[in-house]
Image 1 (cartoon, rainbow, N blue to C red):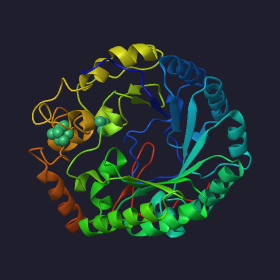
Image 2: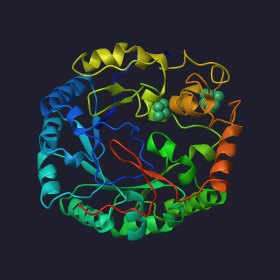
Image 3: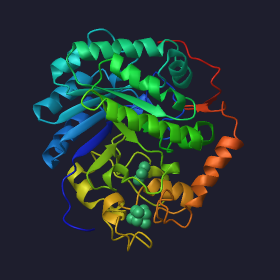
Image 4: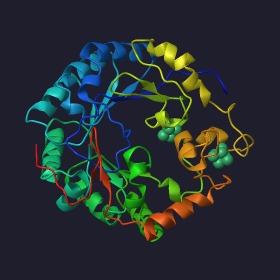
Length: 376
Ligand code: SF4
Ligand code: FES
């Protein structure tokens, strides 16, 4: 560990794994939790109180689809009382009229709506939900009517990378303050569907240029954040800001995790809220301390001058591709297995059947984009 352990700044609260959409790029674990495993209202309130006591400044209310929790207003209200900034991360589908107003009334600070495509046909195909696009547009209108700041999140992959210019137009039409062009991170369902989701290099290069030009042109009008695609990078991102450094995740059953994919790392035991206090987990959990700071690093990270910039990158990606959570993130050009990223891109874009992805589903997997679920 380098330097004193500071309080966490952010927390991602996965309130539920239930969701009306079935996006194949979802970063939730493939083994999704059913509703009967979710924490009660009282447990979430107790956890939020402890998070505020610990110093957490902002909580992202996520899922699955967090608005499926009927107690969401109560949860938001408690966080507002405790002075914690709240960001609702929603698919924007199936939210009844008046709910956004009620959440704003309870003290919600910000809303982020994901769009699977810039056009209805793409949104419906990727989310496997008929009518999804127009419902999202309607929700975005309600967010603006409630005078809440709005971010549009566009998870980018092979099936929508050509829509990046249209995503920018959509964000402007919807009156968003911010657009996240977020190249998919291959964890959870996205890792399962990597071959079907991976874009080709030429499309990624075009996208980078489109985003660069739009950032310049729309400066002061629309903030465009760009989440770079790891497989095409030469340096990794500081995943979650560094393992257990300034943010953490709570799963629907109260498991407290350093990141959303941490369970893919063998031999780490994760603690659950209720069995232990949040502060005890943050400070003393062996899983949190396993890759905190720089002491755990091996070469080339150990002597690298970027080690306190990216904290060695993503441990879960190192596990998935290099076969060890102690390895340098293969996204890094200094990783001995960096070339595997190019091989994986090549395999995915030349060999794989691009239409054959598996939809996210609790308790099972469904194949093929031809199946579109009925609207709910
Ligand atoms: Fe980051 Fe490690 Fe690569 Fe250095 S060697 S840039 S610390 S991942
Ligand atoms: Fe686990 Fe990056 S997703 S460290």
